[in-house]
Structures are given as structure tokens and as C-alpha cells.
Length: 365
Image (cartoon, rainbow, N blue to C red; front, top):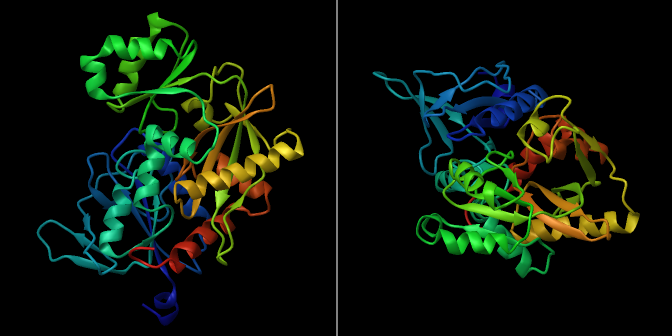
């Protein structure tokens, strides 16, 4: 290994995961692997298979929406406090891969975006891109997220949290609480993303089926009163110079006409969604939205990046829907497009996030 190679920061791109957003994670990893500056960073692609094994993947691997992490005989371990990845091959002595300076966890959903891998990396003393344990966990659990956002005075819609025991033991009470929200409602897993398991429900006859569908992804379910309005999204990014976080220009999400809402297909299949950026809203509302996005980011204690989703009602009100601590991250995903429109192209965004992580201290902060 020459001196130039040794002097480059080593970045582990971690992707895949043990949930229904596995393929979405791979798409983001593919984009980052194409965009990252190989002359500046030594890249180690690491996939997490659906069964939870960590495997080494080729840096030239291409991914499609139907892809999954390929099986490998190599398993990976992360020794506590040493900042190293070690490959454990069956029947052989562990092979050290070298010091890892930073991990870029391109993981979505449970066992990745929810604070679990962040906790692992914290215990191992390894720097990483994105929010820490608490912000990641709260950002993943939409019920607790809304509690904190409301406590900060941010406007949110009406909702009901359906916990596993309540649904099994007190279903009639839960159904009555949901009915009081009015119709339609959106039923979704409380701790999932990418619009997996979401249903738009128009009446009581559809409700139980929708809850059971959401429970296939998460035993905890969130039911939200529908908000009439346009879906406007804004990305937030930490600054490198200790200045406050900054917000992108807002953009309006416009699903294709055959999509009743911004579902999985609209998000990830070509031609099913357009992004109108900057969003066609009054300038004062755009600034208000950007300010609210930063407030939401700071309320949860986010780090690195986030995407904050709003509804803009016909009456000119802004309703905060949710915050995503690791939003979709392909070059064509909403957050990267918003930053590109704000003057930060995708390769520079990737570099900015890695630099943020490299400058961040390990331990409590």
C-alpha cells in the first residue's frame, strides 16, 4: 500500500439491512459509490444481507430496485474502540481490513436508521455520517417524533398511535379513537419508511385490514387524519463551520395521476413522480417553511442531514408531517435534488457529509 493510499480517509459505505427497505438502501449505495471521489477516499463497500450477516461487496457493484446483498462467506466484526473492520472467514484467521475513519450508513428503516447501528458505531468508537442514537430513534418512531415536534410548538396534524397490546386487547376503543379523526385517514407502520405498508382509508370497513397490513411491518401503527394540501419538502444540512444548520430551497412532490398519495412506486420507480423545485409558494411561506425545517432538525438533535416534509394547505397553513434522518439518497431522490437546486451538486453533498463526520468527535457531544 503506497503512502498516498494510506493517507486517504477510509470510508465504509454500509447498506442493505434486515427490513423491507433493503433494496432502497442498495440504490442509494450505488449512487454514492458512483459519486464518491476515489482519489480522495479509500472506499470499503459493506452490505448487510437480509439475514443480518455483514458481507464485503465489490466497489463496482451495480444495483437495481429488485436487488439484494449477495451472499458471501465473509462475515464482518467491528471491534470495540478500535475503529476497524475485521473480516472473519470460516476456518481462517481474521483478516484485518485496516482502519476505518468513517462509516456512511446508507440504511433505512428498523435495524439501521433507528439508532441501532448508530449505537454499535458509538460503542466501537467509529465516526459516522448522520444523526446519533437518540435523534435516529425518535426520527424513526413517528409517534414519539410528533410528540417532540408538538412540544416545540411546531404545527402537526391529528393522529392516533395504535400499540400492539391496545390493538389485541382494546380494539373497540382504538377503532373509536380513529373514527373520531374523520375520514379519510392514513394508516402506516410507526417505525418504517419509503411508504411501505401505508394505506389511505376512506371508512371503517377498510380500517382493520389497513391496520393489519401496517402491522406486517411494525406492531406499532400510526393513524393520521388526512390533511388537504400540497406536499412540500425541504432538506436540512449541518454546516462545516459551526454555523447553524441550513435549509435547502423547498420542492413540491407531484406523484403521477394514478397515485392517490406519495407511495413506494411513486418514490422509486422512474416516471412515477416529479419534483417541482423551487416549489411555487409565496416567498414568505417558503422562508417560514425553511425556518420550521431547521427548528425540527434541532428539536430532535439531528446531525448531518435530514429531510422535513410539510403540507401546504389551501388556507396557506404549513403542517409538519415528518422528518427523515436518513432520507432516500440516490442522486435522483428528493433531498439530493433539493440540494442540487440550492447549489450543492450530489458529489459535493456526499463529500460534505463525509467531512462533517470526520470532524465530529466520538463519544458524548
